[in-house]
Image (cartoon, rainbow, N blue to C red; front, side, top):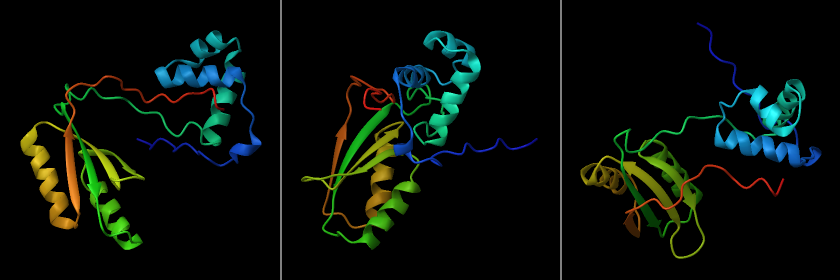
Length: 170
């Protein structure tokens, strides 16, 4: 069985590409469902299949479309608990940041991480089956790195979730 060829993304400078309303509509469709057949996309945007496919390939090459993934239902995947962790540190060196990146990369329950401005240095989104597993993640973190503060916030209800970004700015 052959491995699928990885998509070549980001090979063209984004500044050299112009986007129009058709490109934006194609992106909106793909962001809703990346498995939408080319034929359906082309009909929805008023193109034939080949020009539509070329536009999608151009956006992949420009790195606008980074990859196509499956979204998994957290509850059905037995990780219904979402915890946001605000991390502050007194260590603001590249070495500490690299160790922090390595740490969060080795914890699969950390699904998102951001470096911030303001009173909290980093925020992590963690998905776990229960509090016991969250506690294990917390202990794994504090065992490997020094933090000045770790503040956990448990999500009670998801009010909005989307992976789609606005296309109006292209």
